[in-house]
Image 1 (spheres, rainbow, N blue to C red):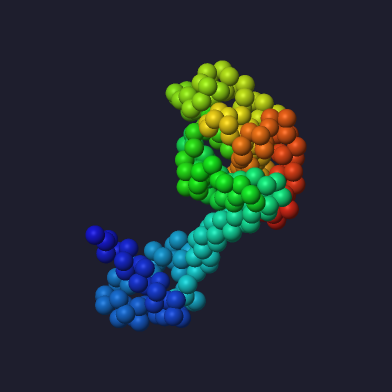
Image 2: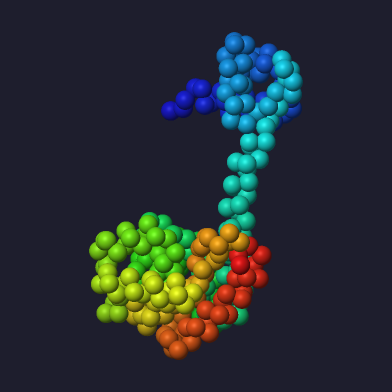
Length: 243
């Protein structure tokens, strides 16, 4: 089921995509009265989606569409750059790499690459992972006050014997993450699997996502977490998007 006024607005934009047009031409193409077309174009103009070249003149597409398009382009850029970063990190660290974003109190992986000679523990892309038990989740929670409060107020489910299930322990862990600049999961979500995450910061300082490396505990022991994080930060800064 569609909404007629929305359909007509989109049709009007399609008409103007072919070039400037007057009210009469738009009305004819949409098969509506000129007064209806005039109101429709005035509404689109109020939102910057179309603009009138001069009083009583033809309409053309407005720069408000550029703003909307840039939001889509930004998402495409994010996905492409995230995948390239994962590929490079996996190649240089010989570990599975992921980029994840925050979803409520969970981390959702959007990109993945597997290091040479490794079998991925599982396919992580699209997977919604527990914030309190994963390195990406801890990293993202640590930099989002509302999400961290929600996580601390909720049930902290146990996934292995090492999972943090006490709110006080998790609160202290998140403070440590903010202080040291990286997060780790030491067999807390999956047995024999460890992971390290660093923030992907925009030039504004906002944390947009988390970059993670994951591997078997013998390939990524706890003693190597800080070194892995340092190497990941260098690679992230070379991406051109994150600092």
